[in-house]
Length: 563
Image (tube, rainbow, N blue to C red; front, side, top):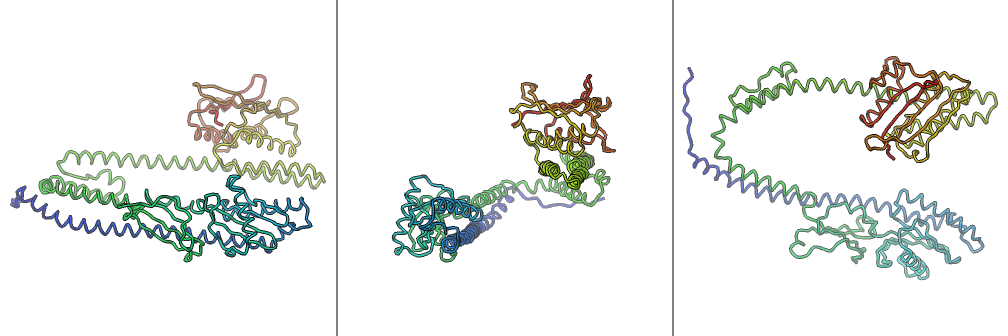
């Protein structure tokens, strides 16, 4: 028999007093941690900002150096400007201007389209823009005037370097080279230069200043904070000399920046934790034995489940306490384990089925035998000396497979699918020398309707392979029309032939919503098409097969009309 063990009981007031004395050092620690967090967050924010600006300056420095080298080389060494001479002709000047624009366009792919280029030849009084303009006409005239004025006062310029310049009330970075009466200029606005920094969080009153190397401010993105708010913002200087740039950046940013919300959240969490500890301190001892200990037992048993099998986990009792809630959790947890085991099997089987479907679909797309047959046909045509037919066959085959290997989207325009089908028929008529009568009665207004790729070709290939025409030639027709269902617009696409029709068991299975067997590979195209329609549209489509009393078969597809 167990001996009763006497425990010391504490009055509520004494417990609260101890809780209060415990809270005092907690508050002191909290204040110290908060101060340290504020300092560390500020340091991390500045470091993050410095890293971002350093990356930006390095990239921009490389771009400006590349453009400067390009401008210098073009003016001094590139023969593309040789036609601009006094004995030249207007046609030569025009062609040279077009060649220069092409050269600049190639350069803009690597340096950015925000940089504008201008060329001036004083002997012929020719001024052209060598790149696409991003300014209005009035600004363009002012740029032209500056370029001409700088040329006339070339002795007053400061050499080959990027210089900030105000044109039409807007600040630009300006680079100009003059050689043998030919001047080549690159120009970019400060807003475009600083655009990559617009995503940096500087705070509601943060701003970026653009200064020349001698300290003159040419541009400022926003008004600087004033009063007490000014002390909450850092001012960071990024010298142009250190980064190899012709300008200095001065950034005023929120001390906490992106980390401000984190600090606020941390502050609130500390306050909440402190308040909660004071409120709940008086209940801790009273609830320990009745709540904490049962939960510890529950948690200990729960941690053991990772090392148990599914059967052992299902039979494990997580708690033996008298707490009704924990007993209910124990029962529900057992049910949950059973359900997870069942769902795990279902998901695994579903993934296998989906992967199998994807493999079959990819096999349908590749069709290596068809590709080899096309190459064999082209080789035979060349062997017989029929070069013209071989060229046509090669063109049809190239277009067919270009579309086939690019059909990786969920939807394509109906016009693209029709063109792909016609390319396939052209290949078959040349390869098999068969007379195929093809017609497409689809209004132009349907050509922009989006349908799944490789949808029509599946049924056209099926006709070519299996249809036995009643007459001398195989007839294939594709029609399209409107269809309304539940006040929603659909498109109805019908593919007909004059063959022997579908077997009745195939039509019956499709009508009953069943998939056709794919074990032997038969009807894999129809089955894959239905599955693709199911994945893309859910139940919002109609698909059925029918045989005509006059002979032949028809495939009818109705899908939502989306353009």
